[in-house]
Image (cartoon, rainbow, N blue to C red; front, side, top):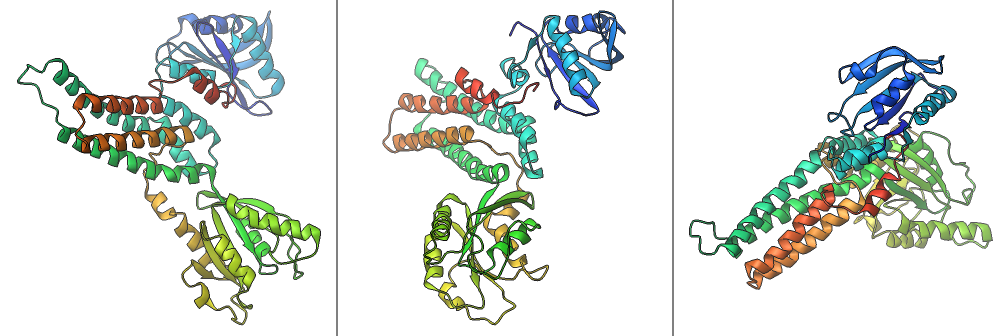
Length: 451
């Protein structure tokens, strides 16, 4: 990290402003070569200066230049940010000049990577920055900003500190058994500490289940027999005419997809071909695809027709959907009732229609209930947010179970110490106290240039 890097930190294209960021020991020196208004070497840190970017006496652009000196910067290195007029030609020309005078083009995410390696942020905070950039809903933004602010890191650090205190006491007991005034660590003491840690880890994992829903949304499948109103439900939920709606059975032959922001949660909805026995090869393929999609989705909206009796196909679909979060929506409740609800009363059954403005209110209310939206609303959003973090925490839980078994078998304290230290190290991996180069390369390769 001895070289000075540069990159465009704003989207490249037509816009009011573009920002070229430079970071490294020579950042101010390089900016000075192309800035004609003032000697940036003499200005105070964290100041902004008006002037022009020039190339061999020719004015390239009118700019504002921010100067931030090490160590109180994002990367902890000297940083200069050139705020020039937006536009591809101008931005590229200023960046070209910066590179010509000694900077290297930054790799994706390299500014954030330097901030991590220089101890400015934790690994969770770095991942939070990535999530913040890619957040598509307000709830996703809240999770990400909590990580960027270091709230989750503080939770993990608190756990590690408590474990470290226990490990230190165990070490003193082992190395200096003759000291009478030293706290004696017993299996009972370890049990209480591990039980408390286990509860904290369980709670963090449980809360973090919501993060997947908030970040990625919920894959939602609308399924049922032909002409029960599946496409109309899709259109109403999306508030657009996404699917063709007719009274001809079998109109929908292939899956139709759309996404809606449902009270801060993205529903990725798929409307499917009506499930029935058919001899038409194309419709037959569509029907089988509809059935196969049940296993690939998180939430199933199984639609029945209020004006028809429950058929064998309906019962078969209900059985196939039992392992999923499933809502049986009895559509067309404005028509004469022929559906025997007693046959399906043990399931999540709601009624409605697509004719009135409030016809889907019961369906929306049940969706909200099944995805625990009320609980998510009350949350403080201190979640782990990706598979790496959650997987590592699940490993911690497994080791805690092993320690519990060891305590029940009256294992010696020095043997239990090994597993306690493993937990401490695993928690360190979550926040980036220890990590592999491969992990960092994978993470930062997903970042945009200039971040």
